[in-house]
Every structure is written in structure tokens, then in C-alpha cells.
Image (cartoon, rainbow, N blue to C red; front, side, top):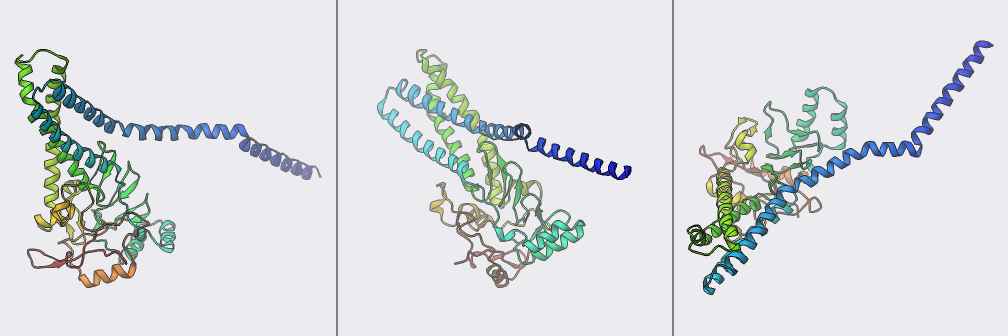
Length: 383
């Protein structure tokens, strides 16, 4: 009896302790403490997002000061000739407008992510998460990838799968840790635009570099005459002297740095490579090939800028394709079979998933390599 009583008493004490613990956890004080523990992570995340805008703020401050120095200090206070002043202002504002337009378009364009068709079906996803062996997981991914236009692999030959986004990566797609998403045809994450440069805004980024270079050229070409006059003391020392001298140096330094970056990206466009592919060759089913997506200079340029030259100089979307699949010379596939698979499985991006873009037609997708091989990997939009 004593043993039973002790057992009952022990059980009662245990339930009492558990009840008190539950009250303590669900009490307002506990909730406040839990909130304080979670607050630092949210605060750090917001601080990180705010700091990411510092380079953009710096660029805008420099551009704002250059506008004041050029328009007010140079054109209003320094240039005596009205015809020269007006011509300078017209040219300056044309290139400034194109520069600002392309720059903010590159900033505001949301990175394009893969459509939901590249996510694992619910049954395969459950099997994949339940499976612990990597080989079996790869078999599941290979089974799903048979119905997808995916022809690149990891360095080890495995299907490219993103554990964060839980989807099979389309060709040339990579996960950006800063944007926390997979980006179609990812080139790099640029801090100067606080955005990921990829399929949706690569043309805007190149135009931003081009017009920024031209903006600097216009400033240097029109300021240099008065820069020399101030430097040789042919003009009186006024408050405009500092602005004009500093404006020339800043424009020249920015031009040199931007021109080198622009030249590199124009070279990438000519080769049809991204920055990631330039450093690490894409791996196809038959091995790595750094020029696997190169289709010739004209076709490579059209991939980014489009087939109609009248849209090339404007920051409007005109790139070919849909970002999910690309014509490649490294993989042989029957065009009719590819289109049949894509239309059957509906792998094109729906309007709900993002902005609809022009895509390759069946005629655009045919390309002859040196060996005479016809290659076609396209993705057609559903009607």
C-alpha cells in the first residue's frame, strides 16, 4: 500500500510539474521572451536589406551631384555662349535619360524564377524527402527529369536539384543566396543594382553599363575645355572651379572602370556565356563544354538583344526564349519529340508565374554545328 501510495504521489507530482511548466511557457512573459529571442534575427535581416541599398544610394548621389555640377556650375555659370550651352544640355539630358531609364529598369526587374513545372510532384517529393540514400534520391530525380527539358548536370553527373527551392534546376539556372531564390540564366548578383542579373534583366544591365559609359564620355568631352582653362588659370577662380575639376576626374575614373566591365560582358554576349559559365563550364550529359550554348556571333547577340534591331538600344524586354530551355550544340534531340514532350507536360511558364516573354519558334530553334548536327531544345508557350 505504501508503494502504491508513493506511486500515486509521484505521478501527481509529475503532472503538477508538467502543468506548471506548460503555464510558464504559455504565459505572457514567456511569449515576450520568445519574441525577444526572435527579434535579433528579424532586425539583422532588415539591417542587411537596408545595407544592400547603400551602393545604389551611392550611385544616385554621384549622379545627382554630377547633374548639379554640369547643368548649374558648367552650363549656367561658366559657359558664356547660349548656342553651346543649349547643345550641351540637350546631349547631356538625352544620355542621362537613357542611363537612368536602363539603370532603374535593371533594379526594378524582378528576377525570373523557374515555373512550378520544375518542382517535384507531391508523390516523388515525399519519396525524395523520406529517402536517406543519395543514390536513391538521384533515381527519383532522374525519373522526374525525363519529362523536363533539362540537359545539364553537376560536375559529378547528377541531376541539378535545389534543396532550398525544392525544384529541379533548369539549364543555366542557379540559386542566389542573396535573393533567396533560383534565378533563370543567372549571371551574377550585382550590388550596384541590388538585384540578381539574369534572364529577365541581362539586357537592361548591359544597356546600363553602355549608357553609363556614354554619359561619362559626354561629360569628359564637353568639360575638358573648361577643365584646361581652370587648370591653366585662364578663367577666374569661382565656386564652379572645384565642381568642374572634380567632375572631370570622377567621370574619367568611372568611365575606365565601367568600360572594362562593359567590354567583358559584351565578350560574354558574343560567346553566349554567363559569368558563372565563364568560370565554370556547364556540364552536359556528354561532358563539360564551355561553348555548349554558343550558336555563332549573330545568334548569340540575338539571344540577349532580340531579333529586331530597333529594340536593341531601349531597355525593353526583347530577349529570345523563355529562360527555361536553350538551344545548344552539345545535346542532340529530335525537334518534334522535344516540342511534343514540352507541350504534353505543359512546362512553359504560365502568366500567373510571371511576365510572359517572347519565345523561340520552331524555326528559330534549328542550328547547324560544324559537324552538321541539328540541335533543338525549345519551350513553347501554351495557347
